[in-house]
Image (cartoon, rainbow, N blue to C red; front, side, top):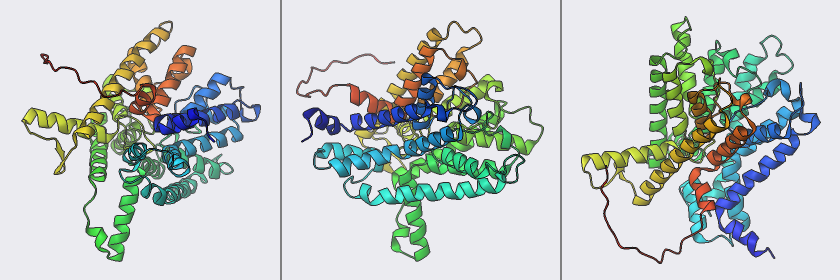
Length: 454
């Protein structure tokens, strides 16, 4: 019989989720610390922990050169960690439901369903698990074939093209941002094929499996003439797709106007670069331009995109596009005097608004504390500026992986904080807070008194 502590661990899904990721990070650290994983240099335990956390939390921040400092075995371990980390939330939620469903309370099952599938955990989760895994492998395989078609014609890539195509396809779809090249995607920025394949993989990995499955079902229904194809999109899918496209377009325009990649002579190349950076900056962390040379205005645009992130139940971090949409809907309702907040003609429940506000508040607080701590831990490095630390902090929290190049220069306390930020960003600030905070009885109700606001 399981012990009471074990049952308590699984009665709180937040602990099960965090513990599952911690176990995978620990395993990855042990494997990456083995000499067989090392390439041009010996990897320290802290560097192995940093890389493992970055891979499992699908971030992409690195303190060593992934391409040269790890061997092919190390690259394979990193690719597997990215794949397991990308599917981790869905996989662990399903395992908790299927293997421990009789011990999970209805409240816990409902929370899992609402957080990851927006539906019934006991039925839809089991039904969609195989579809999610199959769809993931299929999309990655298609992306790998396109990338291989280009890589095999690149000089010096003849023998490593298959593995490199698979590695970058997994990294892109899982929104991990890891690359076997020290300059990320700058090496392939002149190839529209590679750029659009990476953008496509990042986009599908960032909109969430539930949205992708809904799109596939609707497409099949239209092809077969089924009446299900005429049903309206769910509110979740409409919000995710519309806000994601809006951020891609707005991000591209703002990056162009703010002077990103202004040294590029070609007009078409510059627009390709800002489009690629707008897509990748919200979640993946690939870069086709030198982030360290971007003007301050462009860095602030990247920080905003990284903070928002992509969709829930996806391979992305950040506060999520749905939280941003709900928050602005509530602000709009308050400013216009509307009685209820609404999106696309649908009223938003008060508990959803409260959760979105809490997620944003906790995220802002975490990143403010992180920037303060980094300014303290890195005060002995005069070459590191506040805007660089801001990018580093938000990039880690948003599990993005963009950096101005200061990650290898961080002190040991700074690296440990970035590791913690990547972990909290992956499981979500609300999940982390709920796992750490004790449950209140809710039996006490205090007298009400008003405060002056604003």
